[in-house]
Amino acid sequence: MIQEIDQSFQYSQPHARTPEQSRAVRKKILMVTLLLSAITIFEVAVGIIWSKTHVGATSGTWQLIKYTYIVLTLIKAGYIVLVFMHLGDESKSLRTTILLPFILIIYFIWIMLIEGNDIVQYLQSVLK
Amino acid sequence: MSQSASLEMPVKKLWGGGTSPFGTSYGKLMMWFFLISDAFTFSSLLISLGYARYVHADAWPVVENVFYHFPFVHGHLPLLYVGLMTFILIISSVTMVLAVDAGHTNNKKGVLFWLGLTVIGGLVFLSSQAWEWYTFIVGNPEGKLMQIVNAEGQTVMATVHGANLQYNEYGHTLFANFFFFITGFHGFHVFTGVLLNAIVWIQAYNGVFERRGHYEMVEKVGLYWHFVDLVWVFVFTFFYLL
Image (tube, rainbow over all chains, first blue to last red; front, side, top):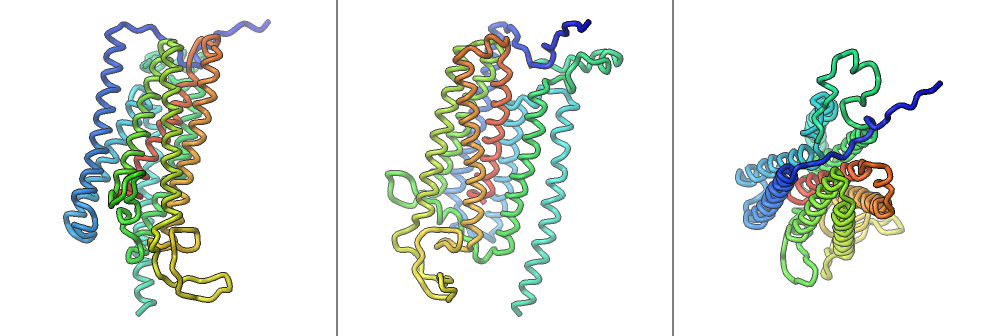
């Protein structure tokens, strides 16, 4: 005889919350919203005030702005993934499983930089 | 959120069935795996963009001199429109979080309200993107005199307006190609997300999840929607800002 098995563990179940807990959740969402908006406004403001045409694409200022942009993007991405997608609340093994493959992306960037350098050198030698 | 209760279980229970892997649900786990593969696709696109920019650095346009239009306003306004689009997507991501949160407490009204706003935000973003594409394709009235290969295969001088896949007035051909492909692929994801959100909204309205006893489907489409926002954050930086 087949037994009726409780399958509820396969789905994330709703849970009752105290008003304090609800308020804490909302406050966290609000804080992250403000942070993401502030970073976006900051990025746009920097892009308008110190625009690439004004400071020059090869200048040190633009290099600094460029890396600031990349760091800010990673901060934004971190907040979206960890708070909005709740990855910060998942188990450590799941977090590792999801984030570890992205080492391959860093490797990909590295080999494409090498490849790009080679192609640029090749094109220069051909044009000479 | 439930802290992984399975981790504290004795090993015998953990491997004896009756628990879900990683202490998360099957559907959410599969959505995460799909999103990883999708993230790899977008990463490849953005890395190829960086590669093309680097190799054709001299022919690559300064992006702020291409996208400086704003609806109903004349003048040179770089970054403002795309900044607004980013903001719209972030806000629709926030309403999605609130919808998921309402689902956690079985609050049907909350789910309908916030998910509805998310659908509207997605539609606003899509129409903004349509306007961006239109402006890009039509181009400036003065255009740019440049060498192109015409239909007969001859190289001629011609005034080029806007952009297509063969040539564009802004710079290297690949610039327009990457613009169309990356923002187009992302826009397709947004379109799919709006569709999924709308379907889940209708199901929630019909009480499907109430009968089921949980709103996990909102969490799953929520993961997808946040991923779409996440991709746009990277596209915004690597296509428009740098």
